[in-house]
Image (cartoon, rainbow, N blue to C red; front, top):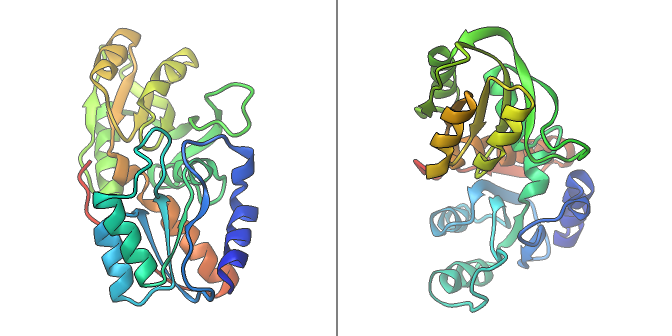
Length: 252
C-alpha cells in the first residue's frame, strides 16, 4: 500500500481530526512509498527503530512518536539520531497518541478493560463522547489486594497500590492509561471505588487517601502496550500487512 494511502486508512479508523492533541497524529516522518512490512511498538525510541531496521520494515507504527508540544524544535542529539536512522533506511513513522487512547475497539483504555475484566459504562469527562478517562464495573466486588494481584497478572508488572481506609471492596472503577493520574478526582466525584492510571505523581497519594479511593499506578508503558498491538493486528487482518509487535522493556 502507498504510504500516504496507509495514513488515510489509519486516519479514517482512528479519527484524529476529532481530538485536540499535544502532537501531530499520522505520518510524522516520510519514508519509502510502498509499505508492506510494519513494526509496531509503544514508543519510537532508538531501540525500536534499530529493530525496525534489522527487520527491514517499511514503516514503524507507535503510540508515542515525535514533535511534542513544548519540546525543543531543533533536530539535534538524540532526536537527530532517531530521525536520521528513519530517513536513511526509508522507514515511515506513523504515530497516534490520544486517538489511540480513546478508540472504542483497539484503544488503550478498552484493551486494559478487557484484560482486567471491566465492563465499560461511560466517560469520566461528562458530556465528552471521547473522554480520555472512562469508568466501568467488575462483575463481582473484590478486595484491593485481589485487584492489585489481577493487575499484576494481566500486565506482568506489580502496581503501586494506595489503599484508603474505605471502601473495603472494589466494584466501580475509573481508569486512564498512561499519564492520567489527575483524573482521580473525577473518578472519586462519580463514586468510583478505585482509579487506575499508568503514572503517579507525588500529590496522587494524598488525593487518594483524602478522597477515600483505591489508587493503582500500573505503569505508563504497561498500560499502553496493548493498544498499538491491537491496531497492528487490525491492519494485518483487514489490509493484509506483515505486522510484528516489538515490546521494548520499560519498567515505568
